[in-house]
Length: 321
Image (cartoon, rainbow, N blue to C red):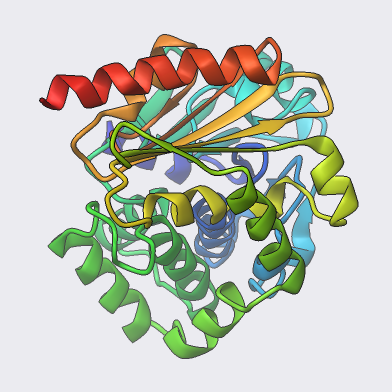
């Protein structure tokens, strides 16, 4: 799988790189990291993101080259989809666009069936897509510039929770060390990524006001409405760390955050300390993710979706007994 992707990249000179909607540190880090790696080889690379981009990642080198406008199909030899393996997850316009292209490669570390693309490297044993690209660069002998190293380090740092999550393996620690050696300034990066934003603290306060603990304190649920976001002048990108905070409550095994979307759907983000596989819940409902971090977008009202998800998570917790 990895060699097939490498071969497609080697044979392309005009490449489009795209990741999922509401990009996080790994989606942006892997996209820009791959852009720098390929550009250093003389390739023309465009990075597409339907956005919005969280403000803590605006410092990434090359962010000014990220566009929400798709190129013409005749301007491309290859499209590379990163950090997801469903074309619709890249955006409303880009999903159909990617599905029509004759050459698409995928690099992703999320679970789920892959039925898209001509070459796919999907491996959930990796902590981050940025870790996968780092390994690919090393195997292929691609020079890792300080700009590429910075972007890829952000991906591995954020998807491991600053190397605190259960996916922090010796392999990803070696990748992080190699990226630091290649020029990623760990202190400067951390200051940007983990800066304190007052509106996010206020948003977290609202989420804590809505907190519900059950199952002897092992299940934490909360929600945020569109009205809450508007009142606090916040957006979905400001919620990236909120569900992680719920999981950090002592005694909590599983957490879930429910968010209303402008389309009338409910976005559910789930986290686990590792004993309950939340990806099973997400995948069964059309979503995806990992054992300890997964999500799904569902039709219905907040009350009904929350009741359904809570019942499924309680079953997982009861199975532990």
